[in-house]
Length: 196
Image (cartoon, rainbow, N blue to C red):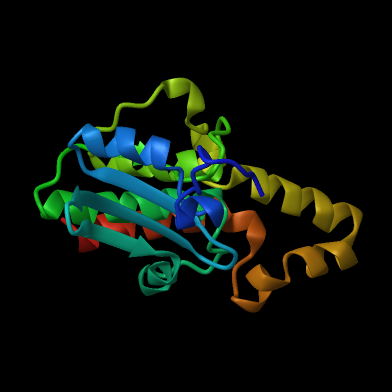
């Protein structure tokens, strides 16, 4: 540990690697609600939050377990699932009167076309105004899960045992991974109908 009279101990959440206070301060100074995207070890969460002096207030939230309610049978942390979470959270926020937000990805690295930006694309498609460049958002075919369906098709033809192993979660849920794009479209339609 550093020594000396001028050494300042970092804040606890910074020491634990949970909060980047430099980024957080800039986001809060903007005064706009934040689209908070967090991908955890087993789940994902998308929230619209507003900072107050007493702490953050969550205006709208979508958890990956909520997707089951709309019939989602796929994996809950992949690109299509995060798009649907962003779409769902934004629809809820629009009902609460929120029309714009800024992206808060926390300690996630801003990688082009990543899952985090799939959630942002979902929120944009739902009607939320978010300042983000088009270059970082994933393509529509990737958002729909066509890359997963193509991989499943290739694997099913070349190595059926590995196919069953890799896609066991999809198969046990009763979803053929090759039909993931159609399943995605139907779930998105259900979310739109439920939150009009």
